[in-house]
Image (cartoon, rainbow over all chains, first blue to last red; front, side, top):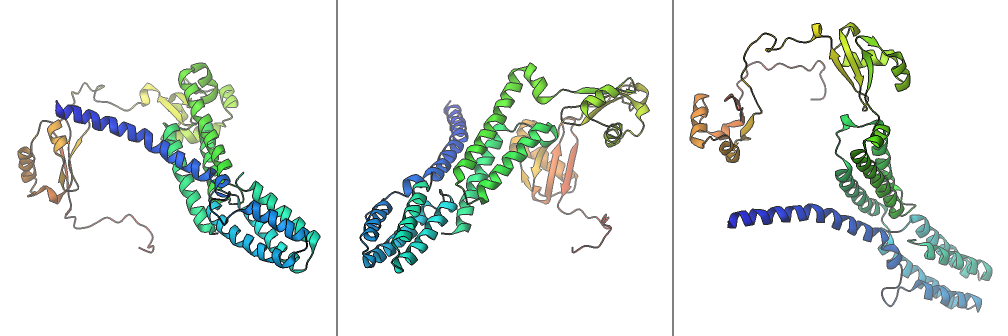
Length: 133
Length: 242
């Protein structure tokens, strides 16, 4: 009687696992693939891209080039941190686009070119918005 | 950012998704596939490939494509299972291409088969003379089934009124040197009987045996690890790297 109960339990467990394992696996995959939109947003103190972009816009607008250069460096560090966590769920097209804009932005700030700096910054922000979407 | 690492993770996602979908859809073996099943397989595989290596876009849209194709394939399977009318259209149906030894030209035209294709399929089945064929049917998977004319059918023990012992399916008793006691019990045998039989064949211990099977007729098949073959026939006709 006990053995029969046990075999029934084992059979039930086996059937449950056969169904549960694929469902859990697929759910994990979906979570990984859709995590980009969540992971690009600030999770700590020092990884807020929209805030930095806003700050930089103000710097460039006010032509505070020293502060702008410093904030661009900060943006680059934050961006490097964020690419590490969104790389599995995001398109390389947007990641590469943002990195390119960042490089051009540094050059434009060095040349104190207000128009170019702003256009690069706005394009970079657009790439960030599209990241993981 | 490490591209190799991203491809590795995406490959795992693609591989196991494909495995799970294939287990859900797949009932058929490759030889039973219809033309559409074949295309379905190629498309799903190709989507999984792009999912893995196309890093310019996210994995998600590819995965949605994958699951949509897999679901549609599954849906088609359900429809053909429940609704014969639709199955006839979706899976196709067998067509008689040779009837009473005569080739049906109209059917061939409809099926888009040439006479040479039919002859090829017949040859594959070991029929080199269409004269031998009473009926030939093209199955939905593209294979041909043949019923030979009565005078060309092989002779069977029944034709000769000979009584034969049924052989049945043989069961493994020893596999890779291990005795499978469950199978012994199934055929109402025990280890004592097994050792007696082994002794008859000059075997001291089951560990010397690679495979031992028994059929319901009581016939044993024994293959030992040591085969004692003096001259091994080599069928290789060209000296390769090994």
